Length: 181
Image 1 (cartoon, rainbow, N blue to C red):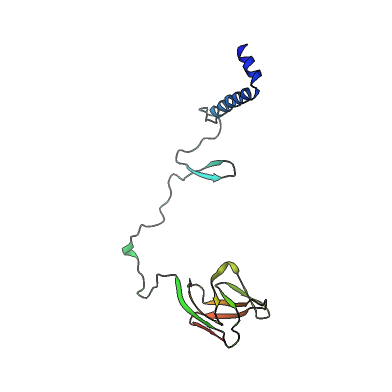
Image 2 (cartoon, rainbow, N blue to C red):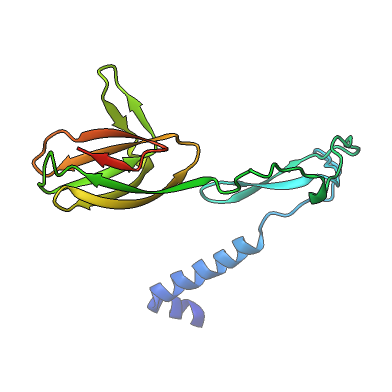
């Protein structure tokens, strides 16, 4: 009766106490396995692979074959043969000189793209997620050091002016280091 009186005078305390007790009971009752022989049997050589979910992480068991055939022969680094002229660097670097002073010395900037598409009318549409460099032009000129993947044999250069006009577009081949106008 004494405890009941305290709970009725402190309703917040009683709610918190009951909530804490229920939480500890629920946490203590977490899932466990059973030793019964009911349900599917798993192979002891199974690999557990986590599967991400928004709320929890589940584990999926993937069975591993007991006798996997050996298909590859082990090799060492001494077994590799590499041509003497092989380039291990997957990138190219170049210094690009831009001078459009003969066309305009107004404020402008240049963007370089490694991927682009050609339209039917001969214009180019860059893939903006593949911009590799950009720079402002001072009096129509700039020098830009760029590094890009060797797989691209050409780059698209777009020179934009602040007046809102369409950009000048140039294709820069791998052996070209200048844009002159």
